[in-house]
Amino acid sequence: MSESPGIAVSSGSAPPAEVIPRSDVPAAPKPLTAQRVLPLRRPGRWIITAVVLVLVAQIAHGLVTNPFYQWDRFQYWFLRPTILDGLLITLEVAAYSAVLGLLGGILLALARLSPSPVLRAVSWVYTWLFRSVPLIVVLLFLYNFSALYRTLSVGVPFGPAFFSFDESRLATDMAVAVIGLSLNEAAYASEVVRGGLLSVDQGQHEAASALGLPKRYQFARIVFPQALRSITPNYVNQLIGLIKGTSLVFYVSLLDLFGSVQSMGSTYPGDIVPLLLVATAWYLILTSVVSVIQFYVERHYSRGALRTLPPTPLQKVRNGLRDAQARLRRETAT
Image (cartoon, rainbow, N blue to C red):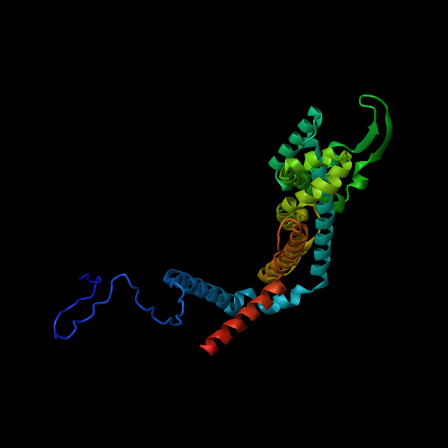
């Protein structure tokens, strides 16, 4: 008699043996139970966060409780007409210098990328010179430029002059400040623009040339808009440095924001610290506004390069509130 595997067979009247289950038959699955996934504990992060919060609280406590800061005098000077007039001069100098510096940087970058060896050499020497000389030296040199050249003329080199003019009449304090900052800014902007142009894929140039587009149209409508994605964040950093660099025009007798603070500090020596805090607050406001503009400009030129645009600060707040509400509902449900 053949026996089935795993089953004992007995003869006679003996009771049947115990049936042994087959080993190849899978056991019945256990019912699934909902389990909560716990996040990984990171004690080091919590310790560092606590230390940072303690330091921030101590700094804030020192700023609020230290009478040396004289916050009542800060409030008095913050919107004084003298400070606002200096702020307006700072904005004018920064705006003119930013526009002229960017235009000069574009021309220098194009000259650096030009096939002409003369243009490449002149652009390289200009960038090398003004990146090497401190800005304060450039401003003081231009401020005393009339001592070297009392009159400026335009004509044939080593020949007759077509017309000439008095340099001291044109070199006002505002003109000296704008020209000095623009010359310095153009040297740095040229490298920013050149790096942005080189970041454009070579295939874009080849595709534009294959379509028979003019060089000017290729640059204005194809190459430069794509290069702006790389140029914008780097040049905004330069623009923030330019806003802070306007504080040096005080040395060429132009009372900008920092010059007004220095002048009032000399008249009221007891208010030096609150006046410096006023200047610091205004510079923080100006650079913060530029940073916000930078975000939206970058977001605009990232269209076509990203599948989804980065959310705006308002959208981040809304998404955070929505996620918090959803998390709260899940906690309540469990």
